[in-house]
Length: 315
Ligand code: ASP
Image (cartoon, rainbow, N blue to C red):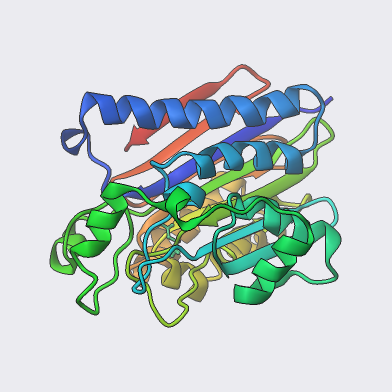
């Protein structure tokens, strides 16, 4: 049995203790802990990395505090359009969905694309049709309504601004106070198989069918047993332009860097050079974990069979 590990995130950005109430801080910590426990239990019972990350992400998608599933932000049209991806590092199978609506757990749909379609990436109405065909659970619009997300959207909906979650501010303020949503999980199971997944509502007030990095294999999500699994969060456009998740894998495979070193190079050098704020979580084939971000904070947690475990919000 090799060391097994689960890491999760719930978004990165200007997450500062002074902006947090004790109640909200506790709610975030509890939400992360629940997800971590659910995913880790799967690994402990000799379940697969894929099943462990799905279990963790479903809990985060069901939690209104996180910008994914139920807590997804509003688009310019006042609806929720969600993106998700999952990748199995043991066989490089992958499944993604983009711009889906009313799907309770987009990660379940992405997994269904991975296992039961001949495709990797489905979008919009077609992805929704596939969800119906596969019996994936749908919810009415009201399920996805939350007052704080609505207020967040209302404050910018009449402008061309778009914003990166968990904020009530306008763009000018956003630029100095960025917070990103999105949830992610990466695991290495007892057999040494790695898997990674990411799920998001994207950006508040997004339009023209904007899609971020989260569902793009190699950008926001990647897994390969030879190297690592990665899930990203942050300003998606920059993570797409740097092919961030795959770049970590390449730095390990072709240059011999450790997971921590490779993530450090991508997050603190390559992303920062083009103004890419955010972070990523990763696990390598030995079950080592790394959680790296260049923003003020990242909602995050890790638990490993070597006894290490933590939840943290700030730098
Ligand atoms: N990366 C996500 C996106 O650009 C947002 C986030 O991580 O908060 O859609």
